[in-house]
Structure formats: C-alpha cells, structure tokens
Amino acid sequence: MRRMLNSSQLLALGSFFAGCAVAAGAFGAHFLKDSLDTSMLAVFETAARYHMYHALGLCIVAWAVDRWPEKRLEQAGWLFVVGILLFSGSLYTMSLTERRWLGVVTPIGGMAFLTGWILLGYRAWNMK
Image (cartoon, rainbow, N blue to C red; front, side):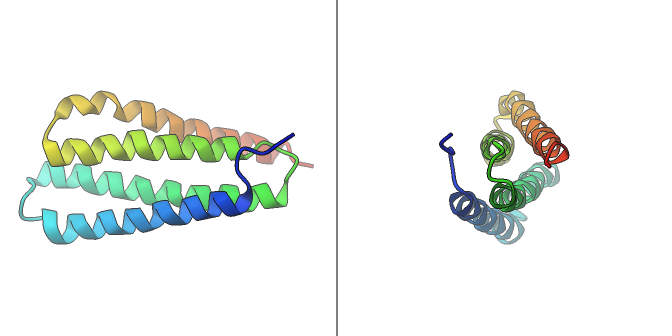
C-alpha cells in the first residue's frame, strides 16, 4: 500500500505550519493589538494557538508514521491540515475582516481536529 505522505513530508509540513503559527502570533501581538478590538484580537489569538497545537500534532503524526509504518496514520495528519486551514483560517480571516459569517466554517475545522485526534488515538491503541 502506498502512503499518502511519508514521515519526512509530514514533519516538514508540521514545521512549516508551526513557523506560520509563530509568525501569526507575533503579527497579532505586535501589529494588531492597536487595530483590533479586544474580542477580535482574542479570536486571532485562538486561531494562532490552535494552529500551533495542530502543527505540533502533525509532527507527532510524522513520528508515529515512522514508528508504525504499516498503519495509515497519515490520515490524522491530513485532518490536522484541514483543521488548520478551516478552523484557524476562518478565525484569522474573521478577525481581520470582521466578516462574522465565517464563523460557520470554524466548527467544521474543529471537527477535523477532533476527528484527527480520535483517529490517531484509535490507531495507536490498536498497535501491536
């Protein structure tokens, strides 16, 4: 069975997303604190925080793919990618543009995060 992504690709993707999360956090802290109201700045910070958590989650998936190559763990990684794009992406955009209707996309990203963690845990639980 051919893997969708190998461990080094997953680690590179996780590292890229982690770097982006650091940049977003710094941007929010240094450039947005005076231009966003308190509630939208909190939304932006939530986006950056979950962005980083799931970038690190991708790195965990990369480690797991190396450790248990016969299992399809990379699916959890893809769910983290989708979650970052939908959850964090919608929150970043909503906070910067004040288009609150984007909030309807956020839970879809949250479900991708949740499903990714459940899938990763399920596959790990069933390892031999």
